Amino acid sequence: MVNDEGRDHLAPWLPWATSINDVEETRRWLKQFAEEQAKDRGRMYGIWLDGVLVGGVLFQVFRARSGICEVGAWLAPEAEGRGLVTAAVRRMVDWAFQERGMARVEWRTEPTNLRSIAVAKRLGMTREGVLRDVFRFQDGRRDLEVWSLLASEYRGQGPEQGR
Ligand SMILES: CC(C)(COP(=O)(O)OP(=O)(O)OC[C@H]1O[C@@H](n2cnc3c(N)ncnc32)[C@H](O)[C@@H]1OP(=O)(O)O)[C@@H](O)C(=O)NCCC(=O)NCCS
Image 1 (cartoon, protein in one colour):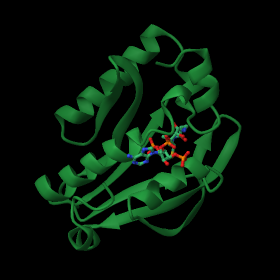
Image 2 (cartoon, rainbow, N blue to C red):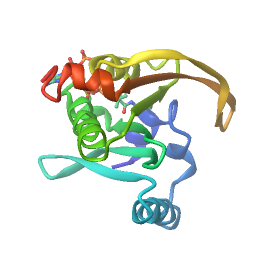
Image 3 (cartoon, rainbow, N blue to C red):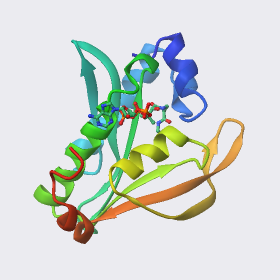
């Protein structure tokens, strides 16, 4: 899915959009997630639209014993604006809370990434604050906002909320 147009679209927000640019690197990256999934410490899923891979969602962090996980997502530009990521992340949130008994799901985003912040809001997440210079990027370090949804809040809104 990361053709040149997709790469330009993701590059402002995701360092791997420009650092992973051949088959070997891509394979290594996907293998890392397969290994994380085998250890139950992370997962990645594709988002498919009419049979075409147009994006992905992942548990960047998944710590079952401490009950904490972090979700992330990306889409090709032509797949934005259809609610695909909100629906996919909502499914992951349902699974994390209902089937895995997680205590909190996090979403981290740059303060200027308004589409990403809109996803967190749509999911009923709360903005907790800013981690300064926490995100290492090709051009330096960046701040990240932390948004989260707690199990107690999720029980309040129920899995059908917002659908
Ligand atoms: C962040 C990103 C995944 C958000 O994509 P998105 O398409 O805006 O988010 P969703 O898939 O949830 O779609 C929401 C949009 O679909 C619309 N929509 C249509 N049907 C919908 C439905 N059933 N449910 C929710 N939204 C729906 C919403 O109104 C919204 O459109 P709008 O922003 O024009 O109002 C995308 O912009 C992206 O990949 N950005 C680059 C990478 C990136 O920043 N990743 C996140 C790093 S933290």
